[in-house]
Image 1: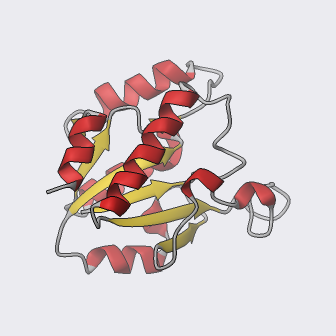
Image 2: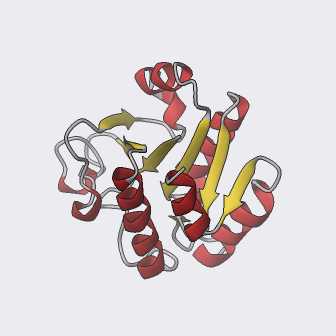
Length: 173
């Protein structure tokens, strides 16, 4: 199993997110459990381009301090929503024998959605722990409605939705 942590960057992991405190607590607990149990943690950062505030060299591009990658943990950079858009990430994932991929991070309706669908199409068993992805309000839906829509409807047939406790237990096996 791999725990994939997507776009947990300083410009995105901010208090305006839906259920911010619970989401952050879940992310920290999941990364901690993965490290404790020897589950590989892979980070992906989104680079939105020069001048965006979310590009290499920008403070907002950096992964939040609470989840800072440890020595030996892989970090990839992507320029499109799906993590599989990074050729090195894609090649690394294709070499994995264990096809269980637990996905957490930001934003539910962008990079998480694109990566969930890309992973499923590539034969991965996608695991989504409850409360482990979030997003902002938008012109069409609140952050809460968006998160519920994707987690409870859009991904219903393609992911294994588990509680936080079940996810942590899975890492101990």
